[in-house]
Length: 628
Image (cartoon, rainbow, N blue to C red; front, side, top):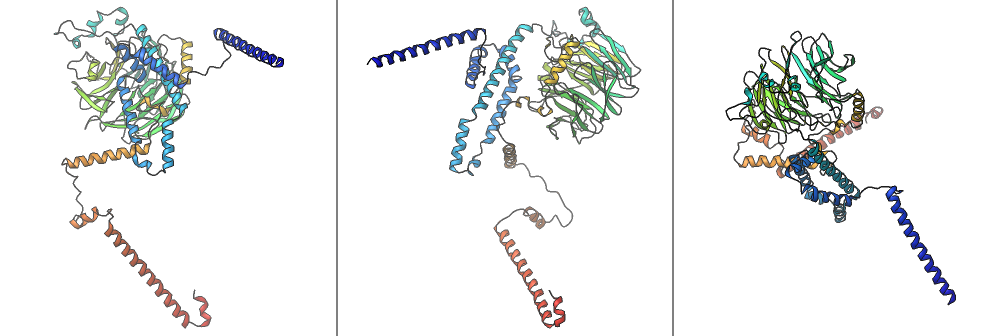
C-alpha cells in the first residue's frame, strides 16, 4: 500500500508537470504570434476559401449598389454579359459529356468505379480552384472600391440647351473660344505637302506621336504634350505604315521591301527580312508580338523580345491592307477585298471566325472598341456596319456621304470616328449599341485633301488626322479616358527613365505566351470539361437535325447537276443514288459474284496444271528436268 501510494503520487506529479509544460508552450506560442512565429504558413484550405468567398458574396456583393455590382462584374468577368456567356459555354460542355452510349461499353465494376471517382473528384484541384476564385473576388472588390474613391473625374460631352440646337454644327474655331488654354493648344494644323499623304499613330500613353509621309519616307517623332519635335529623318522610299513597340524608344516602319525597327534617335536597329511588301502592322503589348500582313496575303507574328518568327498563316484571300486588333483578347481582325473579315490567332493555322461583312464590296477600314464587344467596318459601298462580336451578327448600319470610309477608329470612351473623303464624322458612344439619328460632331478639312488616317489620342480629348496636305489635330470633348492607371506598364505619360526601365523588365517577366490568345480570354485558368470528339459529334447531330427540320418544313432539295449525254438517264441516276446503299440483296449478289470468281479461278488453275502433266508424261526423260 505504501508503494502504491507513492506511485500514484508520482503519476499525479508527472501529469501536473505535463500540464504546466503545455500551458507554458501555449503561452510561448501566443508570444511568438505577436512578434513572429516559427510555424510555416500553409495558406487557407479549400473549405476555408469557399467559406470566405461565400461570406464576401453575402456581405460585400449582396449589399452593394447596382453601380458597385457592375464595377465588380467588370473586374471579375469583364462585364455581366461575359459572365453569362461563360456560364452558357460551361453548360454546353457539360451537355456534351452526357453521352449515355459511353457507359454501355464498361462492365458493372468499371461503371461503379467511374461513378465513385466522379462523385469524389480531385480534392486538391477543387481546393486550388476555390483559392483562386476567392483571390479573384477579393481583387475585384478591392479594385471596385479603389475606383469609387480615386476615379472622381468624368469625361464631359457637349450638351445642348434647347432641342433645336445640334452639336455636330459646332466648328473647331468656335469650340476653341470655350476651352481652357491647355486644351486649346491641341487645335492646330501642320502643312506638310512635300511627302504627303501623311499617316499618324500614338503610343499607349498618348505622350508621343509618330507621323510618317507615305511618299518619300518622312518620319517624325513628336512630343504631343509640348508639340515639339524629338526626331526627324528621311528614308527616301515609300512608307506604308508605322507603329510603336512596347514603349516610345522603339518603333517599326513598313517600308517598300521590308519592315525595319528604329529607336527614338532615328538609328536603324533591325531589318526584318521575313516581312516583305507589308501594308499593315499591329503590336500586341502583353505578348510582345508584332503582326504584319501585306501583298502576299501572309499573316506573320514576330516576337520582338527574342527576335524569332512565331508563326506564319496563309489567309488564301489575296492582298490585305486592313487589319485591327481586339484589345480585350489580342485576336487580329483582317479585312479582305471580297468583303469578308477573318479572325486570327497565332496558335491556329486556320481562321477562328469568318464573317461576310460587305457583300460585293471590299473592306476598306475597321475598328474594335475597348471592351471587345463591338466592331465597326467600312466598305467601298459607303456603308458603316456595326457588328456584335458576342453573337457575330450585324447590329445596325450607317451611310457615309462624300466618299467611302477610308479610316475608322474608336476612342477609349466609345466615340466612333470616321474619315470619308475630305470630312470626318464622330458618333456618340450610344451609336455602337443602338442606331442614332444625328452624329455627335463633324469636321471638314477645307481643301486639305482626302483623309488618310484618323486616330484618337489616348487619355486626351484629341483626335489626329493625317491627310493629303499634312496633319491636323482637333478636340473632341468626351472621347478620352479621364482616369489614368499609372500601374499599367507604359501607360504613364509622365514616367522618367528609371520607371520606364522597370516597366520594361516587369512587362517582360509578365509576358504572355502566344498560345494563350483565344476568342474567349476567360478560358485560361479554367478546367476543360469536354473533349473535342464529343463537341464534333454534337455539332454533326445538330446539323443533321436542322437539315431534317428544313426538309419537313417543305424546303426543296438542291437540284441535281445536269451531266453529259447518256449520264442523265433515270437508270443512271438511280444507280448513282444506290451506289453506297448496302442491303441484303446486294450482299447476296456480292457473295454469288465472289463465288463465281473463285470457281473460275480454280478451273483455270486446274486446266493449266492438267496441260502441264500431259506434257510432262509425253516428254523425253532428258527434258523432264526443265518442267517445274
